[in-house]
Amino acid sequence: MKIRSLAVPVLLLMTGSPALPQDQPTSEGLPFEGTLSIAATYGLVDVTCILASWRILGALACPTPEGGVRVCVLVENAYPTGILEVVRQEYRSHYAEMKEPLSALQPTTARARSASATARPGGGDALQFAESRVYTFVPDLGLANSELPLAIPTGQTFQANYVSELDDWGWRSPLLEKFLAPESRMAGLKSCDRVPDCMTCAGRWGSYFPRVGALEHPSQVAGAHVQALRGGRVASMPLGRVTLSSYPYEPRTGHYIQMLQPSYRTCLPIGSPRMELWEKGAGSAYGAYAFIHFGIFLACNGCLPTTLAPAREPL
Image (cartoon, rainbow, N blue to C red):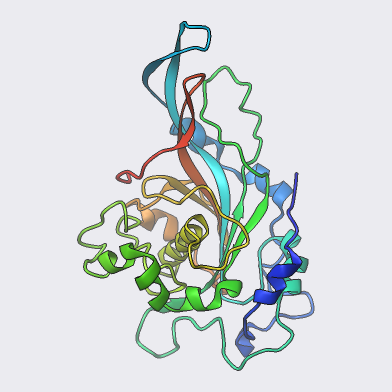
């Protein structure tokens, strides 16, 4: 298991601000901090998500270097590729391994602006704001040598890709998105609730664009899903944004996401209309959520390398 250290040059890009007074940690930290570890996450992966999504799509024939023809079975299935975190408090994480790296990134000079404003008390609105973390997480679950042909991507066991505090301006302002992400303009012309297309919408959960941490959403739980997916989108399409490294598995509608904290859930198709079942009892008093992202992959041994499948209608 490898944990890539955060490079020193990244420290030069630090921007940030203190959390709200009510979110200040005690000497032991906030209740959600350190409740997860990378090693423990192996045991939390919903393996049934992989097996239940497995499909045989057909067969392919391709020429071999020797001049013959090879025939393979084309399969698709979900597989865990990343960990997505949403937290209200700056430089905080569910993962014990991230405490020191995030502390090292925290600026020594604080600005008089909060990063954790969310759902203004008495404001009568549903405004939420959260910070995002994206980590590559492609665990070896012991399925590669099974008799069942599976599409298993290659990637880092654990690698930090995105910490939104370093992307302060991009994560807070939709202005940058209008210039760098044309999809943001298109998304602003329609409602995902009425026209939930697979390219700009996570079903009826909400829009992927603009890829910022502020959104108005009637549900904190569903809103946290959207914020996590937006962070994953930033890391997978980092043009003009400040990232630690590219996340090669873009979150797509119809692929899968699994909640780990504050309440453990099985995986759910991104954009699924069954979100209400996952919302019950899953609210966080600290606005802190941790998810596993599952991409859906296609593979045909010997003819087609493991490839991320296109977006699709959520079931």
